[in-house]
Amino acid sequence: MDASASPAAPVPDPAAPGRPVPAPVPPTRLRRLAAPAGVMAAVVGAFGYVATVDPNEPGHYPVCPLLRLTGLLCPGCGGLRSAHAFAHGDLLTALGANAAAVAGYLVFAVVWVVWAVRASRGRPVRIGLAPAHWWAVGAVLLAFSVVRNLPFGSWLAP
Image (cartoon, rainbow, N blue to C red; front, side, top):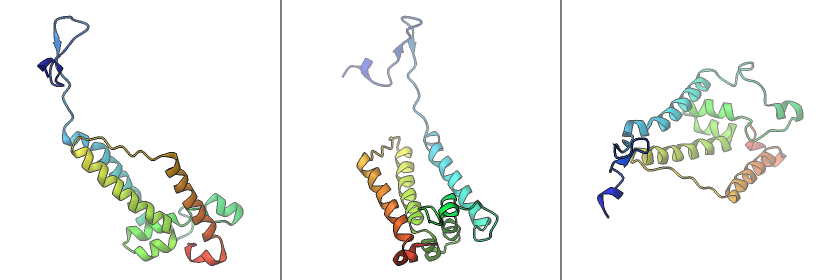
């Protein structure tokens, strides 16, 4: 491989022929970690707010529109109570409020760690889920919603 083909070799400037343009400088580790750190800061801020403002007290948060209009629990019903309990370290109460939300917190944590590690090493994160995977997630959430609204699944209701 000759030296002109290496990524660090200067590239000729099309505006000024004969004058090389320096190769772009790769981002530093701190810059690569900025996006994962920003996302984690937003999540910590949101959980901090929900931990401080108790969703179990009426009037702080709006009622789920589906619950208000139909009396049916959606997959997100109990999610704020779950986040409140999770932020206070009460895992059993969090699971009782919304088990799907707790599973979502754990999936987020794993994906975030993979993202942060790959970003620190300068590698891109590719989460290539096929449409079948997205349909499966939707089917699981739909089944969760149906079961928690039936008498035998009342243990899944918040």
